[in-house]
Length: 323
Image (cartoon, rainbow, N blue to C red; front, side, top):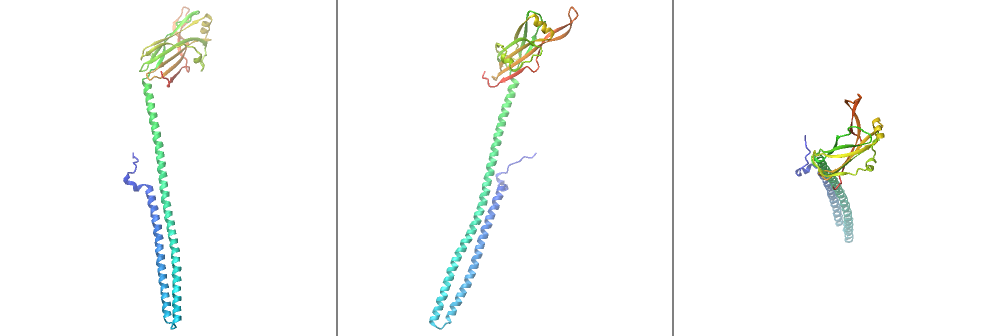
């Protein structure tokens, strides 16, 4: 696998903006050279024309020497001198206008070249700023990703060692009897690697329709009066939640007939070693499980057991808790 290695400072000539700048500079040099060459070519042509005109002037002066009359000879010389002066004045003005035109043309090319170089420089600065902006965004994203990675790593590390409270049944009703008080005991166990602190727990037994399922209002309305505060529950250290119910004869008969059932609701709150509060809401249902034993009449003996109600149990973490 090959890696993209950025160009070193010694390879500056490989950068695209360098080539564009060099080409622009060459265009400017060529434009200025062309203007100067044209200027000197025009100067040589003007010098040649001046030499021809001077020869014509000398010939006129020589022609004046052939005039015998002194007055006419003098008049001829005056006319030749005035003509030459007018020609020189006109040539000087023309040369000044031509110089202005030539240098204006050269200035135009120089300005165009400078404009190109400036445009290249502005483009390069814009590209540099764009690359800087992208690099800044990439650095921000990398920092956010690193922070998220740290947070996720910490969350996973805490999840691996924090306290986990579970509930299991230690005993249940031996049988359903009318007009008697029945007691249910649940055992709370911490299966995590660190203790659970300030554990509060309570259980409640109630009779409801056989198809009862708790809605969102069940837990807030159900009065548990949490009790059993403990300093902590270490790993494997059990604690017990006790619930009781008195069954009248009619209610017991409805349970035997399958019209009603006994439900056990258990609520637990505790803090883990990272000072986060956890809650667990667990509902179980009394089931009658047939056994291999027979009663005195030869009927199968059923054993009542509490089983968790599927889909009714919830667990949550209050990450903002201060303990």
